[in-house]
Every structure is written in structure tokens, then in C-alpha cells.
Amino acid sequence: MAKTKYKELDYTYAVARLRALENNLLEANGLEKLLSAASADEAAKHLQTIGWKGGNFEEMLQSELEGLFSLIESLGGGEFLKTQRVKYDYHNLKVLIKSELTKQNGDNLIMNLGNIGADIIKNAVINRDYRLLSEDIKSAIALAYEQYARISDAQAVDIIFDGALFHEINEYVKELPEEKIPVLIKMQIDIHNIKTFIRVRKMGKSVGFIEKVTAAGGNIPREFYIENFNAPDNQDAGVFEHTPYRKVFSQDENLELSLDNMFMEEVKATRFGAFGIAPLAAYFWMKENEIRNVRIILICKNAGISEEAIRSRLRG
Image (cartoon, rainbow, N blue to C red; front, side, top):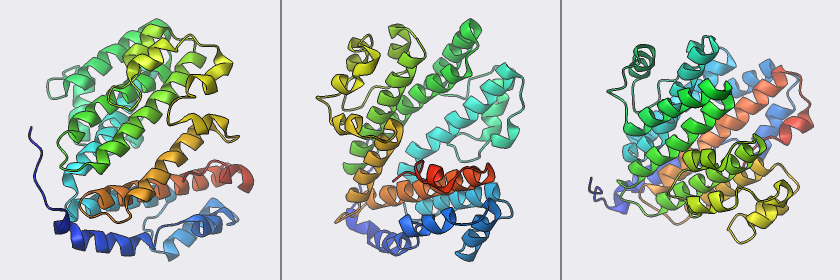
């Protein structure tokens, strides 16, 4: 499909509105207020005072996420949102497939934010009728069943679907009339592949498995992960020494956290001096990251985890 032509200045109003909304995002000070709350309930009450809606905190988080999608759609970011809705299609697939394999009901985890209706995906999985699903999804489902039949490992199912997810995102990116967003998507693919490379090696999987679950389209070619798969476990820093991600391997903090923070740094830099769809994408990722951080705080507070331990898990 040909890319849609557009003029960046057509998004002047949208960008101005999002610049104003950025001031309401919970940055470090706002998150500290939640961290200092005596309980998850108290933190949720604080969120209500600043405009978050919903009864319990799951409803609040869902409401914010749905509101984010509606906002970006209303400002003309529908084509970009297709790249982000894909992950909810795959989220629903993971929930439904793992529910079937482990005999546990996960209906409460289903989310209606994907490109494909949640009911369509549910019916497809229940009836084993995948005609309405993409080829990427069909292939991932087949591989997930095959792997689980061998080793009964639900984590492997997650990894399989995550790899297929980024392949499908890449197809949507090709249709975007924008140069900055594909650069960030490439970075997301790299980060996914690096995380997968580390996890899969720790799981003791074969090089054939990493070949199936890494995604093409990143700055680092898939062949890199295959060629370095048998490197000693303690030499990850050496493996990635000549890549743009070498600095995260020299940091003391959690590797996955460092990679996520690196992505958010690039997202925030993208919004400066830009018009068009790129600032919409940047705001989307910033707000999504805020929602993720709030989720971490509320869940951890509910579990009695210390303030310092929670702080160490926050992104961006």
C-alpha cells in the first residue's frame, strides 16, 4: 500500500494541544507524590484529584489508556495508532492461548484496544478458526502450540508472540508518511531483540529458537543474534560493544530498565521542533509510559513493596 501524503503543518493545532497536555504528565515530582502515599488506595485518591477517573485502580488505568487512544485518534494519528494497537491484538492472543494451555481463565485480562476485535480473536482461538487473522498471527499460534507441546513453558509462548508482534508492526510502519516514527520503531525492534536474546539464552533454548523469535527490521540485523548466540553468558557487554546499545551494558541498573529508558530519551528528543505525526507519537509513548509507571507504583504498593524498591523499577 502506498504511503498517504500529508502536510506536517496540518498538525499545528494537534501539536499545540499536546504541548499543553505534556504539562499534565506525571514526571518525577508527580510520581514521587504517589510513591510517598501511605497505601495504594491513598495514591489512587491522589490520582483522582488530578483528573484520573474510575473506581478501582485497574479501571483508572484502563480509562487513561482508552482516553489516550481516543485523543490521538481525534488529532489525526489513526495511522500511527495502528502500529500501537497491534500489541493489544497479541496481548489478547497471549492471554487466550495461555488460558487454554494452562486451564486458567484470563477473560478479565482481555483488552479492547487492538486492530482486531477481542471477540473475533476469542472466537478464532476457541474454534481454531483463524481465517480472519493475519499470516503472522497464524504462524505465531502454530509455533506457540508446538513449543508448549514440547516443554510446557508459558514464557516461551510470550516470546513467540512478541517476535511476531514486531514483524506485524513493521508492516504498518511502511504505510506511515513520516520519517521519524520508523526510526523509533527500529529502536523498539532492537530493544525487543536484545531482551529476547538475553532471555532465550538464559532459558537454554537453541539457536534455532532465537532465529524464529527475533524480529527483522531493526538497526541490528537478525543474523547478529544468531551469530553471537553461543557467546559466553558473561560476555554480553562484549557482544554488543560495537552497537548503539553498548552503554546500557556498562550501567549498574537493570538491563531491561536501561533499554526502556534509552528509548524514552529518544522519544522525548523527537518532539522538539517537530510537526506532523511525530509529536503525536511522542506524546502517545510518554503518556503510555506514565500509565505503566503508575501501574507499577499501585501494584507494588498493594503488595507492600518498599518505596525505594518501587522507585528502582520506574521507567523514563
